[in-house]
Image (cartoon, rainbow, N blue to C red; front, side, top):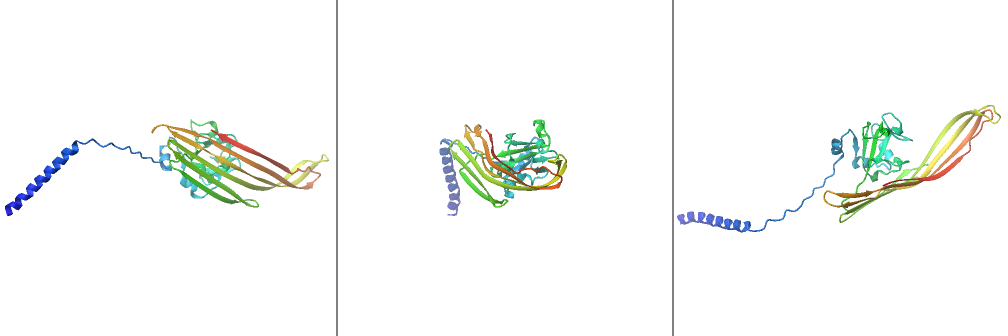
Length: 291
C-alpha cells in the first residue's frame, strides 16, 4: 500500500497535467477576445496649467473663485496680489486701467464690457499675466487678465445659486443658474446670471467762478449721486463631437443692463453771487455681445 500510495501521487499529477494540457489545447483554438477601448479624461488643475504656460502667469480656478462667495468678478480681482481695482477697472504695475488688457476666452472684451457685471459662477478660470508680451497689443503694457468662461459638461447637470447683498435702502438680489445637457455627440451649456446694483456717493466741492453779477464768487456744493439698475448675462456654448480627435464648438456671450443715475445738489453761497448747478437725472441701457 505504501508503494501504491506513492504511485498514486504521480499518477494524479500526470492526470492533472494531461487535463491542463488538454484544456490549453482547447483554449488555443478559440477566437481571441476583442480589446475594449478605454478612454481616460482628466482636467488640468491650476498648478499644471501654470507649469505648461509659455509665459509666467497666475491661474485661479474654481476653488479660488468659490472660496469667498463673491457675486461679481471685480470683487474677486480685488483679492488678487498685484491687482488694484478702482472705478475705471482693474489696474496693474501702477499704471492706469487703460494699460491692462481684458480678454474673454483669449479674445479682446467687447467695447463697454464691465467685469463687475459678470458673475464668477460663469467662469472656469482667470489667468493673470503681469508683464507685456510680444503676442499682445499695446493695450497690455501693464499686463493681461484673461477670463475663461465655463465649458460644456459631459453629464446632465443644473445648479441654482441665489444671493443677497446690502444696498442703499434695501437688500439687493442676484441669481445664477447653469444648465448642462448631453445627448449623443452634442453637449450644451447655458449659464444665466441676473443681478442688480445700487450705489450712492456723496462729495463736497468748493467752487470759484464768475458770479451772476460778473464779479468773482465762491460756492460750496454738496452733491449726492446715486446709481442703480439691473441686468443679465448669457453665455451659451454648444459642442458637437465629430470624432475622438475633433470637436466643433459654437459659443457666444451676451450682456444687457438698464441703469438710472441721479445727482442732487445742496448749494451754499460763500462769497458773491455764484451760479448754482441744477439737479440731474439720467437713464439708459447698455448691451455687449460676442460670438
